[in-house]
Length: 124
Image 1 (cartoon, rainbow, N blue to C red):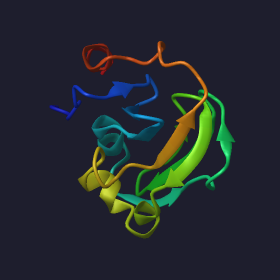
Image 2: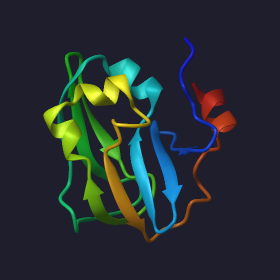
Image 3: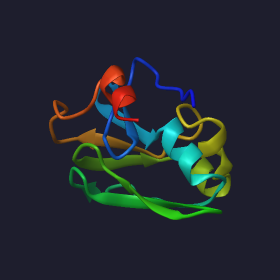
Image 4: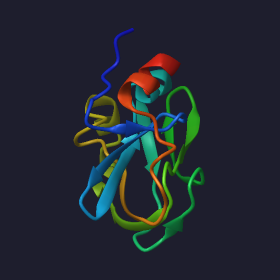
């Protein structure tokens, strides 16, 4: 399979992506993860203001095949959630790196453990 792995993002081994944007990071699940899950029908996300630790489950995605936790690739405080994916969870399948993002965090942790695109691609 040929999965999208945008070069400008960093990745977690647990199949989340991280987009570093000035003071915040945007997080979602990878194209590989959404493909493995199948059609996503429900999303549970934290509230704005919640804090999450690195590698802590911050939400879940439910598909027709499975329910999967989503893990925080970095620690931080949730500053925004993508309410569109609550109402249209299929956005994660259709556009995992654009309209299908999940949360934005104000990071409090390091990034050096994240995978570069080539490293992530090699683990698939």
